Image (cartoon, rainbow, N blue to C red; front, side):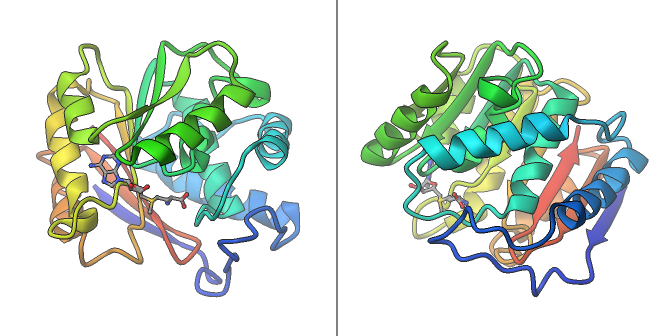
Length: 247
Ligand SMILES: C[S@@+](CC[C@H](N)C(=O)[O-])C[C@H]1O[C@@H](n2cnc3c(N)ncnc32)[C@H](O)[C@@H]1O
């Protein structure tokens, strides 16, 4: 089953990539819009309920704003909240995030399992970044929030990471922009190499479902085909978008 959640104001809800902590709207509105998106995910069976701890999310947000070095990011507050909430609700034992740059997207996922926003105990929360100097910065950032090492960032090609991972993958977050030939088309390579390790009920999140829609065509066709994934929702509440799919 494929559905779209679209807020009326998605084109106007714009952040400055260099000023990611700036508040763009009243908190109540952010909570309402993300709540509507979560309802659609519940309707199609991606998540069992829509409840998550708003105070924990805000504690996570504050820690990231204070401790992370973020040169730029395209993750809006709505997107941070949605990604955090999905992880808090699904509580994946093993989460792999591909293409994490400075780590902000990674910790939006992993923050449900480590740091001040933690609501469960995970086994492995792994961020993968192909550029070693970016991976080093992301790892430095993550260490400030999670002293345990459950959440960690490695410098590797994410295709190899999922291929070599020797346990179940319960949540896969895709944001790698690949090489010149494939660009964000690499999402499909990563998912296909992870697919057999993903048990029924596992979730895949794909950032840029709106503004990279063309490069993601083959990927979107794959996750929207009920033979491959039982449900998929394109969440459109900012200009980037997130495709949320469940096996
Ligand atoms: C555009 S950034 C994502 C930024 C993120 N959307 C944000 O707003 O913070 C994509 C990252 O993917 C990395 N990347 C590209 N191909 C990759 C691969 N095969 N494996 C892991 N990382 C990869 C790039 O080096 C880059 O840092």
